[in-house]
Length: 594
Picture 1 (cartoon, rainbow, N blue to C red):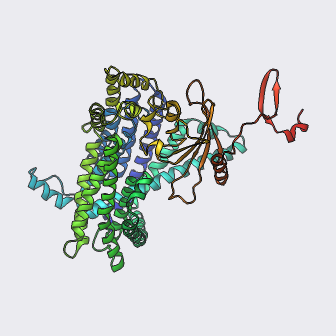
Picture 2: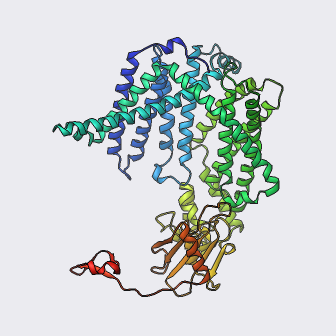
């Protein structure tokens, strides 16, 4: 941990007052913009973008503002705000986004974070502008002005200061409510009435946030000490995770990869584990030779975690590749592929660095600095519409349908309509004029759906996991099920896309009982038992939970053994006039009823 410079440690009261006023004004402005914004209004997206611009610009300015360096802080704050707000200007509103467009906003925030950190690191050295704008001059300027210790330090201190400021803002609001109730006891209701106004609540939170951020900026040594404590605590976890990942990888030759595919979430689990391994390894390496760990055990664990990135990212890549081979491209899979590609670059860079000559701690810090520039560029690129995963995925799905790799009955029209953005909707409208009658019928039908949670018009279009027939048992005897019931069963609140399922269904009846069993790897999970109801020709009627927890095990066994019957019952119901009121009255309480 590199200590903060004395100039940044000095007490500067003006900064606290500036950030307090600025925080309050920005918070009130964002609240007012939210009031003006209508869900489907013409200017809704622009007002939302303005809110994000104000918020991100204010945060960046509060973190970047230094005495006698106002212009640079204003410029970088405006750039950060424009990048973040541009995500909404380039795309739709969040409620109109397809399944994974939220990643664009996340990439926009990541790009602004990296931009801000790099600016802060450059200001620490006060190297000025490059002497030459040639590639060689820029590289020399970067070596002189941007050091890994500064980048690492600001990345952590920014996160810690923002978290502490949010906590302080919440405490300020709680204190205001406490005082309001105290004043109300002596018949002073002014503060209580003000707190009912959203703009006043926003002003308190914004001002409190600005005060806390200003105070913490003036006391950098406290944040530096807190960061040092966080690094020490994280180092202790490195051996635990290293041993755990080693056991996991050692068990794979014995268990095979099949159990991983059964979970349906291998890729996010592997990538999440790789990110945590990356953080813990860098906690051991730290940001300078003075602060790096001297423990042989921790150094070995950090090296192991860095090397384990390769097989973990490899497993994620293989899992994602299987899904793409089976079902083609989708925006979600393209985002996963992008994250895997970036993870692969990081894993390869770490492996080369660690397996080199001695002194890999110092080399790893330089590798991390290069990766910061790479990640900043990738995040900025992905936040823009220059790379349209929706368009790429839509073209791939259309090719699969045209080539016959997927039939008209199995094609996922609903996903194309709801999850592939404007490109997918345009493709569905094109398919509505297809010469194939089946494609044309399904494409027209899917346009009438109002939610992605409704059953697809083609029964097999929702079967994106294991085929339903391979995991479905029908009792009391195996009978064909119609397309409407099949479409209902593959939804998330019935059999889903991967679960083993038991269906109690008799043709002609208006009800069916569905038992969905948990994965075999989940020893403490219980089945779910639901009652499906047919209504107006389909199975979109009410779904009732029949049992959960340990009771669901007995209920599932009763369904399997055939101990199911429908009986007429007598009940007492309160009527006011001719209208039934309230719940039925249990018979044991009937005598007490009026």
